[in-house]
Image (tube, rainbow, N blue to C red; front, top):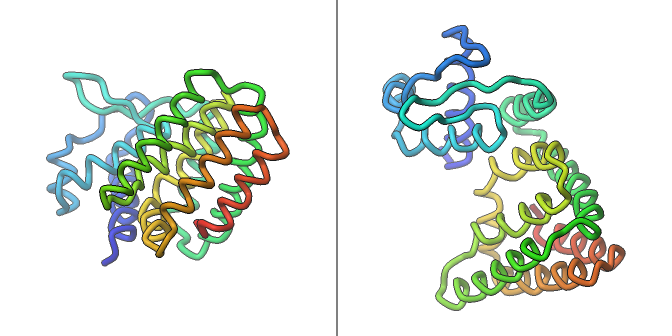
Length: 219
């Protein structure tokens, strides 16, 4: 079974365990070892699935105590999106379109709100991507962090919480996109154009650069 399908299946089964155990906000989740035993998968796979749920603010880990379900509050919308992702594989085109809408609107806000530190982070990610590609490594994590930093730079937590599940759960597709011949170097150049437009607070140029980048990436 492809890695992405295994990953989604683990998330679905964790959700099922929550339902079976009648867990609610504030309750403690089973340990990684127990989840691994019940799901019959490796602990590293369970850990990655839990990390994704934590990024969505659906769970939180307390040092020395365990992992707990968080209060729902404004994250109800994120839960709906998460459920949509997990249950309907045919929705990928819709998810890609939604990701584009969210990311472009976040970029629009980021043109005015991005901090000097976040601009420095984008520049560092570009340079590190170049180093990785020169060493023969596909810079998947740097690519993901570049886009995430842009969304963070809009300083709208809900937009970030909507964006994360649209991309986090399909890093396999991101990796496959970057495997295409010549794509990593082209992607890095496109990132540079987006960064420069953000640095110059040129909204029109930034949106054009990001739109072309998302079109070219096919992800």
